[in-house]
Image (cartoon, rainbow, N blue to C red; front, side, top):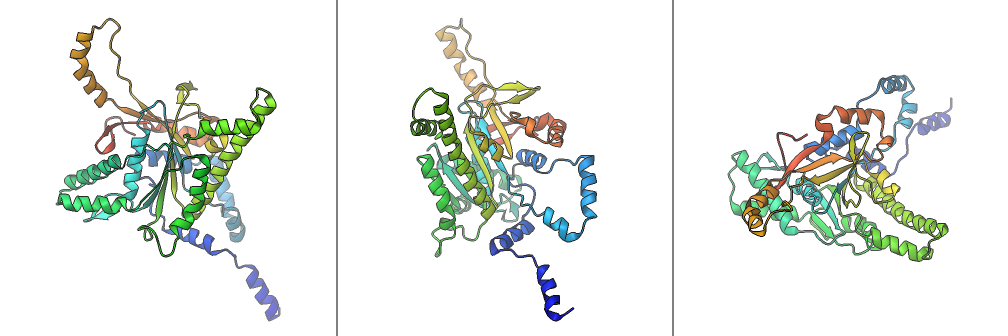
Length: 387
């Protein structure tokens, strides 16, 4: 074999990839752990959906794969595994979904180590506030309460000034945006890479990984989108007009999912979105389910969908007088403040899940559901009933 042919054979074995793919592979190698949210009950659920226990058939298939040539196996197993997408849906208004989102943002923002104590993940966070209800005061309270509680439990000395500086430094890595329409949302998402990679940098997160993209109330523009789609399709009651309207709406959310998927591919960040349910909770094969209100392309994009539901407190009796209601008011308010928030997996469209996912969920304590209280620290797990 001549030198030219020999060199050609060696060159043909070299795998070509761009810098983007190389950097992504490096991120996968240094990815810290299997807890992207630093919130154990949700991380456990994500692990079930992303890494379910293997069936016997799958184990046999893997054994067969191991016997194949290395280069062929490398080609078939090189499919990229993107970070998770979590939807937090509220069964009703004021169900606690935003409070849970604040908790996840807090865990992502706080430093990984502070005086040798673990606090958070030292990430940057993009927060898209579609509903315009974001509360920096509430997030500040959760950050402060969590850090103070950890320091006190670990007997770490600190001053209020040190705590204030810690929280201020953490909040510098929160990047807040307020889209006012669906087109505004898409434009912001398109501009985020340029904003994050700007030179010289216009923010303080250049040395931090983007760990979380939070979307507050992803369905905020749904009804306006439906109206716009109806007007574009031509308002009418004909089946043709309805199909055209649904097609335009689906096109918008398909564009949103495509942009978010590309964003995840570039930044390897977890996406968490809250959503407000409009349908009542139902039972499907013995499991609680809440019908989604967004197009199927969004539902298929989500790794796991959970529902937050506030436990109900009984109302005043129909025969109660005004005086009796006033007397009972303080006790009833205490009952409201002490009521739990239930978090459970949404089993709607579960027929599309793999069998091992369903079996793994059934084997988990309470089926993967857990209860919590909302306190100054945000979502505080109920140790007796938590997952």
